Amino acid sequence: MLRIGVIGIVLKQDKSTALAIQNLLSNFSSIIIGRMGVPDRETGISTISVIVKGTNEQISALSGKLGKLDEVYVKSAITSFEIEG
Image (cartoon, rainbow, N blue to C red; front, top):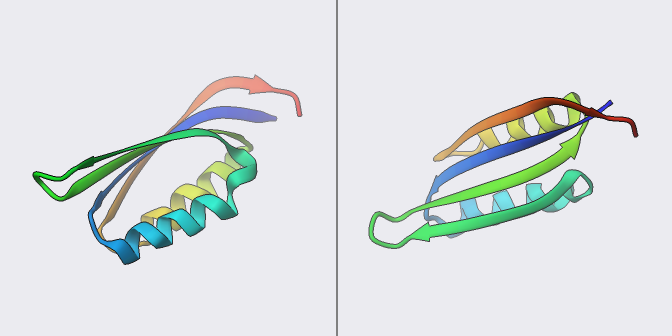
């Protein structure tokens, strides 16, 4: 069963970290419905919200890989709503 979820990402603005996040999101593009990034130039912190549709395993894999990056903080929420797929 597929589920809808949200992954929240907070990172310190660092071009190499941002590139690593971009690469991971590209690798998981098949489960990404949409995303929005908001930089806060004043504090040097960026936030990204990613809406996903996938299995628990797929969503957890993406969250886990993001969380292993330096200076990246991740929280995911998966709904109980199920989609056959």
